[in-house]
Length: 618
Ligand code: ADP
Ligand code: MG
Image 1 (cartoon, rainbow, N blue to C red):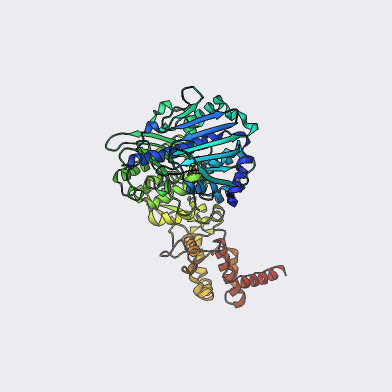
Image 2 (cartoon, helix red, strand yellow):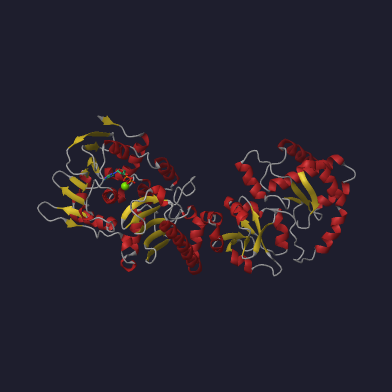
């Protein structure tokens, strides 16, 4: 009976078949890697259960060709598939991220479309379908370890697939590709050998080429790349492995390959990719590392090796200190693994520190992609907060560039004890904030914290190397220690507008906690500050997004006694009640808007503004 592919499967198939012209050869990599996965699974089973005993050296991948019938066959004695597996694994791609795959493709620009597609295919696990790039028909005959019956799956990759009974004595999977006339090259032994070495050299298993009447010939080196010596591995080989495990598209930004022996023995081959993986910000994504015990795969996506804030690190950890039989649930509590995890966290941080000191450009590229994730570690891994802060970069107002906290500290005024920051939605909004005016005037630097995550780690890490993080939108910051010429004059003015301050406070009532004369504003007539005891303005905004009922606290309106508007208002404060009332609200609304908020009442705001414009244009 013929069955149709799922809707999305059809779409992906189309992309796979029609848009990968120059990279058709990767179909072989995909099929070999599937066989290798199947062998991993069987090896694991054999080592952990009594029922299926098979020696590691008996596990094989075999390739053969038949030029007369135009077929290429890939055979493995891995775990195999039963009927349900065949339907599930080959009939639907929907299992893993098809929707994301398609969405990601739509975002891609024409120019780098092709290379992205090729890599996305590996990343999203639609690898098997690449067989249809070179085949007009594919037959998969498989028998599952422990099963009694074999099945055959047949498809032309267009109309759907059929499943029926088949004969197969040994467990495993045989895939027969009926090669298209135009793709004859894939029946050629030399070509197959070349592709196998190019992509599958480091596989743990031998890939044999079977030629009628001749001895099998092993095409690859068949040694797990991480078990080899660093000096014997070329950067191309590292790169190939990096791509094969779906770690990234181009070249890794950083490769960490280490063998550790001692109380703990393990090997790590970890990569930091050069750009963000598609799921970096998806809810609940965890770190996923391949965990091996003496080259036997224990878990394809162990979440217990690296913390969430290092989830962009990809690769392999192989250790003999973790028992093969350990269950997924127990891995979390495995003490050897916990120790390895601790050591690896430090290693990654150390390597990043080295990169920071040695290669600024590379580090900046790293920080741009992953800094935002690293900062999660400041509050998730409290012990490492200082280490992470040391390599964190923030935008400096004075330098108009991203700087390390140590660089900020170097540029501090000798009297300055604190690190001044403004938390804001983005750089532009921070730049427009009236709070900055006095800092500019006094030549004090302010850091812009523009990632939502910043407000969270700030609540955990109050200081860096003894210097308190101080929000400039909060409370009364005492800047009197930092001299500037106009100070005396400000003092004098303060006294003069006390009456106006009181009037505005009466008008605004509960909308503000207080109205004060500002000693900080330069060009703006007014601004809002959070009370000393309250939340930072940006924190409050985030709380409001998360909880619709969250009201927040009324803030303090500070007015600038030197500003023309304020001076004029001061002159009329005892006469025109209506104009003063409108002006007070307009000032308040202006202060709200510069913080990225809406006016108190939009229609009233419009009326008042129109009224004032009418007067000005008379
Ligand atoms: P992925 O390998 O990323 O899961 P593929 O499209 O390459 O995606 O393969 C789909 C699924 O088909 C595999 O996950 C596996 O369950 C099954 N499969 C493919 N080839 C084999 C094989 N040789 N032996 C056993 N299972 C296989
Ligand atoms: Mg695959």
